[in-house]
Structure formats: C-alpha cells, structure tokens
Length: 206
Image 1 (cartoon, rainbow, N blue to C red):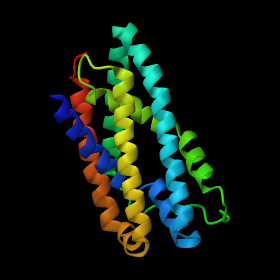
Image 2: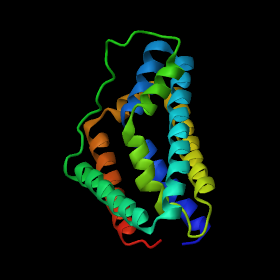
Image 3: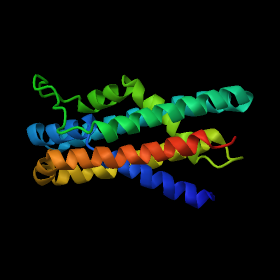
Image 4: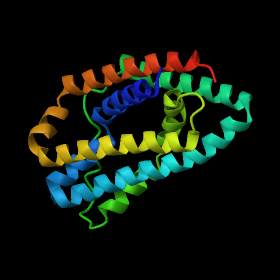
C-alpha cells in the first residue's frame, strides 16, 4: 500500500473506532447534559491528551524494540493480531445492548480536563491497542516515531471533532447512541473491521 492508502485506511478505521459508543462517549454526553458544554469540552480535551501521552510512550518504546529485534517484531505482530481478533470476535458475537453508564455518584467538578486525561492514562487497553493497531499502518522504511505520532494525532483530531459534534447535539445524539440496535450494530461493524485487520497484521511482513 502507498503512503496515501495507509493514511486513508487508518483514518477510516480510527473514525469507526471513535464513533463506536464507549466510556469516553458516555462521559462526554453525561458531562454535557449535567454540567454544560464547557465542562464537557474540557473532559474531551483531557481524554485526547491522554491519547497523545499514550502515543508518546508507544512511539519511543515500540520504535526501539522493532528496530533492534526481528523476534520482538514477530512476537508483537502475532500478539497484536491475536488481541485484535479476540476483541473483534467478542464484539461480533457478544455486542452490547446498551452503554455502561458513567457512575452516578460522580460529583460536579472544575477538573474535568484532569479527570478525562487521568481516566485514559490509567486505561492500559489504550496502550495495548496502539501497540497492536498502529504498526500495520506504518509503511516499510518510514520513521516509526514520526509516523506513530502522526497516526495518533489523526486519531486525536477525529476524537476532538466527534466530541464537538456530541457536545453540540447532546440531546438528540444521546438518545440515538443509547438505542439498543445502534449500539449492537456499531459493535458488530467494528468487530468485523478488527477481525480483518487482525488477519492483515498476522500475514504482514517486516
């Protein structure tokens, strides 16, 4: 695949991932509904800052690991493929019927940026996902650190745009995203994409 093809494929996959309702979406919807748009936007900035920090950690660690060891590359590749396949099959076979609500006991706070960022930093699944997902979109011979940061930046830009849309249309989107059929369909669609990417990663070459 060419560089443009890789960027288009990643943007499509990252968009699908971002649109799939999850805890971040629920947090933004809850904050916008209960505490207003300004606080919700701060939470969104915190969430995406957490993604950037995870991207930085993955960029430097992953680049050094792959550069010095073909064995490490293959182990990482197959572990990543297995993880993506497991994640995708779970979404396909056991799609959610509703969103997990954000804990009702959470009290209003002026630190929603910090809360959003901390929530992402303390979620190791984001780091695992980046490690398993990003390498298949980095063209052979391209600088790993620069490309990892670039792909994470695309993901963050999509996340911020989606957050702005959610905040601007809180009420209608909140109702739509909580519908059982919508949640289940999004899980199944994302699961299928993850399984396809798992196969692609497993058969990819260094």
